[in-house]
Image 1 (cartoon, rainbow, N blue to C red):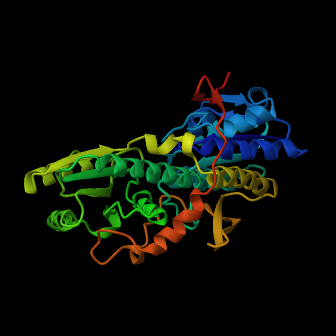
Image 2 (image 1 turned 90 degrees about the vertical axis):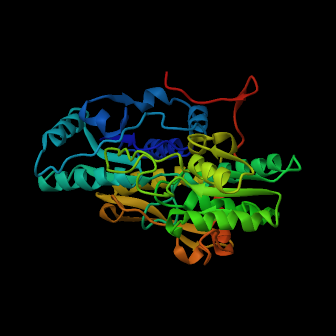
Length: 400
């Protein structure tokens, strides 16, 4: 038999490690002849844009380099499949591609929207009696907002980058002897996990960010200004971490939607900068970390990369055992020592759902998070990957 693997949704610095996990496991599996990679997610499948990964990844050195290369080497997409009961045209094309290449196992690496594809595709094959084709989801997202799983591949590395960057911003902000406010806008869509992870700096003795605001915290502008004034009484340079999902009104900026109906978000940092400038009048700047958070592999978490590869391998093992319509996930057994197992759950429990940051970990004032969050985050950022370098710069794997 042959298998196919695809990547979907926003890039991370660990999604290629999951691809390596699938590929390495395939090499160990005698029944598998060829591993196909789909260019641009499910779009590559129904357009029959597949490449033979066995020809592109030829050595162990290739695999080692690929597992530390950020972003999606196969490209991505944000494609929402229609309900096959209403329109099965794309499903027929997907089936034709699988049959043409003798593909009977399909591994889809992505976030909660991508798991919608796993639900629909596995449901279609079941409906037409094609039980020979198995579809398995492997999670990823820096947002850490997938339900069921303890955490998602890609999140630990993004959190490590964000915490390290915020720490450097803290150092920079304390250079001058004037009052200042620095507002750092961090990704996370509707969930505040990544913004909340800046609390980890406490483990190294930092007291900043002094304020942390999450979408789950019922943000209020007047309270925000009051919070900043309060922190200014104690600190010359106030550092604020704010999630991109925070809003300060229904019409403050355009609400453009993506294919899955999610608001394309950015700009809250600049809005709050103007609020502070108008209400307080001190030196204020906003910093939007933007896409750097997703793919900064030069400071990735070894735990994250290792787990991403392991869960990719587990996904193929599940498919080979006959599972379909499932998603692999992490179940945490212990913080200290850190222990997780990899389980499989129903894709319907992941698809189109979001896991918010726990409100029990948000302070009563809604402007910070508790130390319980620190204990949750710290194991996910442990360890460093020895980055391959050339001419003083990180080396990345590229398809030839």
